[in-house]
Structure formats: structure tokens, C-alpha cells
Image (cartoon, rainbow, N blue to C red; front, side, top):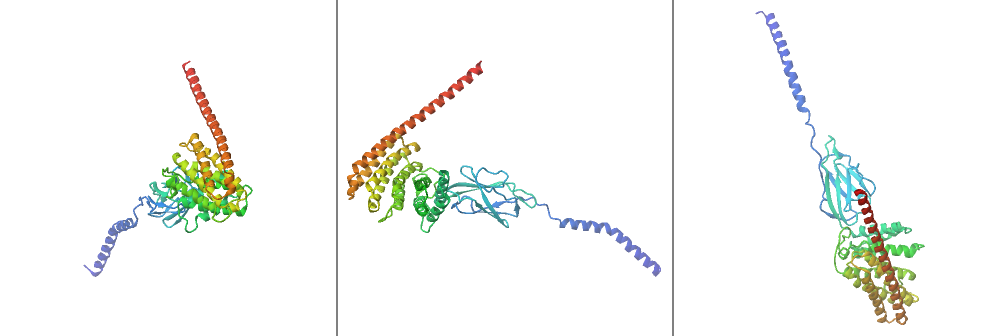
Length: 428
């Protein structure tokens, strides 16, 4: 074969080989392209938090971390009924949803409740509306935790109490109370927080001189004392949504601590003299809202009456007409005992009558053992006024109870009559 023919044959072979390799190269190229494409993301995001099962204070932020970047992490702005369009829900033991501020940095989100949480149990629910970039939804996740915080509980109770009563300048009263109760050295339990908060509130009232000082003072006392839920809640910070039983010792200690605030040693009372009886009445009436056992009311009220009488006598130098002040105090306490009977199921009117008498006797005995001649000379009048007031209060309480029973009976009769008429019509 000539050289020329060999060259032609070689060229023909090259062309034939190239043509035959093109499909193979295309297939190899396609296969390579297929290998470069990632598999579709079908993995749902997950979420974790160290919060689950833990106990925190009411001002704590809540932190959760997702396994990957997610979107649609949304929460409602105000407390109330749950907004079902939101993916983050913070609920309390009663099912109320809390407003939250949410800030995300990377895969970690900080959830800050709009209002401080009071003591109790809470659940953070993260819904399936939360998704990753591929659209994979989070499996709904619930994280439960407990708030143990006497400070937020007491201040929340104070805020709602003042607002409900329409007390002027409530925001500033609450602010002063919270600042005082948050001070260094104040333990986070109600037996420490309540007197400290009262001290702060009264300090503000004395500075601002509200038109209705007595209303502001008595509402403050009622709201703070109402944050108690049984004796045990005074020394552990838990006080909301749980029932406790216990002795009266913690109650007596608390009321004595409150007296220490109002009657500082060797000084004039912290409150105006003309509202001392209002103060005594407010403390007595609020006892019924504390979850106290009916069997311990007598001991608590007697101790409280004796404590306040002792404090008043010690401050006699600063209290004009001490005998009249003591009479007004003993009278209102004897009356307010019947308020407890209207609130506390385990403490009836008959028991209230006994406690009213015991309270008056405690005041009398304390006066008689003192060295205040003015008060001693008036002790019979003090006793008589308190006894008469208790009698009137008892009569009024019995009349109110009878009226309530009559209304209940009438309602029951009406319901029965309506049911009978309906039945007759059906038979016809």
C-alpha cells in the first residue's frame, strides 16, 4: 500500500473512531452531571432547648436552637387568647397565651415574654409552620418548664390589683414597689418580697401625696397579700397555680414584717395617722385571700392584732390621741374578720364572731400590759366599740348570707318549674 493510501486509511480510522466515541462521551458527560446534582433535602428541622423541665425566674428569656436555618418563627405581641396563625405559643397553666418578642441569630432564637412570668408552669409550643429552606416542616414540639419567682408574682398581683381598682398613678406605685423588692439582699420569696414591695410603694405614696391615699394604700396591701397561696408559698417562691397547706407561723411572720415596715422603731408611723385603721382593716381582710386554713385564722388574727397594738403603743409619742386611734383600729379589725368569712369556705360567720371577740381581747390585753395610761384609761371604751362593731358586722353578714341562700333557692325553683313545663309540653 502506498504511503498516500496509508495516510487516507489512517484518517478514515480516526474519523470512524471519533464518530463512534461521541455517544459514549455524551453518556459519560451526562453521568458526570448527574453525579454533581445533590440529593433532594427531605430532612425536617429539629429544635432543642435546655429549658425543658427546668426551673427559671420570671424575667428569664427563652432560648431555642434549630438544627438548621428555618423561617416563619412568629409569635403574638400581646397576652390573651392564642393566635393560631402564629408558630410560637407560650402558654401558662390556665391556657393563656403570652405575647413574645423573638430575635433570631443564625439557628438560635431568643424568645422574650412581653410581661414577666409569675410563678407556675408554662409550655412553649413550636408549630409545624416553621420550615427549612426546602420546605420541610418542623414536627410540632412542646417544651415545658416552671417559673419560681416570688418577685414577679407579687408585682404582677400588685399591678393588676391597682389597675382593677382604678388607683391613680398605678404605674409609678408598681415601679417603686418593684425597685424596692428587687434591691440587693431581698430574698426571692414572698415573706421577704411583700414587705419590701410595700415599703417601696408607701415611700412613693408619701412623696406623691395622692388624693385618695387610703384607697391606694389598702389596694396595695390587698394586692400584695393576695399573691400568697398558702403558708408554704411564703418561704418557697412558688405561689401561683398550686395549693398548699401549712402552719400559721409563716403568716404571722409575714404580718409582723409588714408591721415593721409601717411602724419603724423609735419613729412616727410610715403612713398618716388617719389611715392606720384602714391599714389594719386591709391586712385583716386580705388574709382571707391567701389560701390560709380556716383553723389557723384565729391564731393569725390574734397575733396580728397584738402586734399592731404593740407597734402603735410604741409609737404613741408620734400619734396624737392614741386612745382614739386604737379604738378605730380595734373596731375595723373586728368588722373585717367577717370579710374573711365571706371569702374563705372553711371559715364561717360563727367562727368569724369568735375570732372578732378574740381579736378585741388581744388588743385589750396588750393595752392593759403596757405603760400607756391614756390607752389604759380608754380600754373599756375600745373594747365596747369593737364588740358593738362586730355585732353589727355579724348581723349584716348573716343577712347577706340569707339573701344569697334565698336567691339560690328561687333560682333552683325557677329552673325546676321551667323543666316541668317543658316536659308537659313534650307529653302533649
